[in-house]
Length: 110
Length: 112
Image (cartoon, rainbow over all chains, first blue to last red; front, side, top):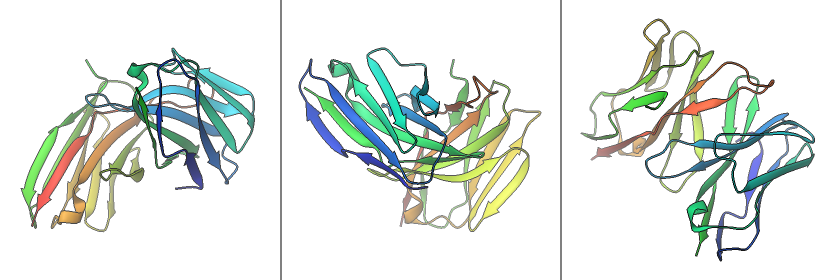
């Protein structure tokens, strides 16, 4: 897993509340990614980072923000959670040409 | 239309059968990944291909760049191979970070 840990693994939250998911890595990876996985869709890129404080949007970034203040942590924030953001979220890191994924976070917005 | 199409979407087979999962893509790529996801589990990279063929145990992956097509084969399938298999392609560089484009996955069930 290239030292990638996601937290929490499961979360239930109420509509309108902010939520932060954490991705922690121990291998000094430069490139990190947040994806969401939904039935009927492939993994879709939310945001990615190519270094500390260097982030950019992916294809489904609306309603999400990210921060990377240090190499090892890439945080995904749902500013005001909505039911459409109920999903499984995966963090990933790129090591040369290989891709490594965290175990996923199942988020339910009620 | 998805840039990466997998077929079949679902596949059920008996233990011991030879399995083939296909992936076709429409974008220019530098590499293709095959990933495995067990129920409730994380995603594990099986192969990364840019040409030809790779083999790991009972798994074989091939790619034909000209035809924009890749296949994942499983020989002597076993119930523990039951998982979702995902094809992902690496598109040209965007702002220094390469982006993966994913297929929707193939759900494989191997019955004993």
